[in-house]
Image (cartoon, rainbow, N blue to C red; front, side, top):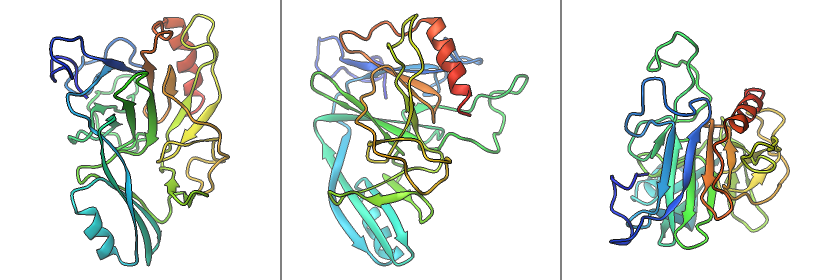
Amino acid sequence: MFSPGQEEPSAPNKEPVKYGELVVLGYNGALPNGDRGRRKSRFALYKRTYASGVKPSTIHMVSTPQASKAISSRGHHSISYTLSRSQTVVVEYTHDKDTDMFQVGRSTESPIDFVVTDTVSGGQNEDAQITQSTISRFACRIVCDRNEPYTARIFAAGFDSSKNIFLGEKAAKWKNPDGHMDGLTTNGVLVMHPQGGFTEESQPGVWREISVCGDVYTLRETRSAQQRGKLAHILHCIATHIKSCILCMANYSQQRRSFSKLSSWSRLKSHAQLME
């Protein structure tokens, strides 16, 4: 993820296309020690010079860890679903010229575009070691269409430095009726679309959970339960509160430009704290 000064606009002599912004609730304005590199309280998503998105391609059924590792080591993006010690489904991904992908997480490794850290309690140094975190190292990815209306979608889990996502035996996973695999992450990625958008009159919406493939489900009984909730609907990231990373994605569509009212932030932040 880059600001205009860090990457050339997708078309010369033209104003770069701005997909939207990510804002970390709880750090509304600036981080205590200031914005540093990819760790910021607010970040704009711009259309990249070259498409960075990926899409599902080949599906492999493998019976040994060695075979799974061999597929994951080809240099392609892939997602591995471990069903048992003797059965793993590996889904290879291929380049998608029509989308840009941005990744969010706690990790400072290069695949993460937007680094989000835990909110430390008063008196503690921001760089203090957090022993337990509810923010995954590779928490989620946001995929934006490179063509109008520049739709943004969120997916649980992000690809690591080896371009892989691994869902172990204990992770919630399943095969959908159309045959494709899907699953949920350990910490989970929860989203809430505020009623009325980000205005003085906005009210908290219903919390949902996002799957690895971007489907929307009702919440599990517990965050670590292996049984998923009920399929809800498709969510586009327009003025949407994302709980796993404590941030908000505001898509710059024609009608959604006013989203920084402090009273709205306060109400949504208070509601988010109830979900901790």
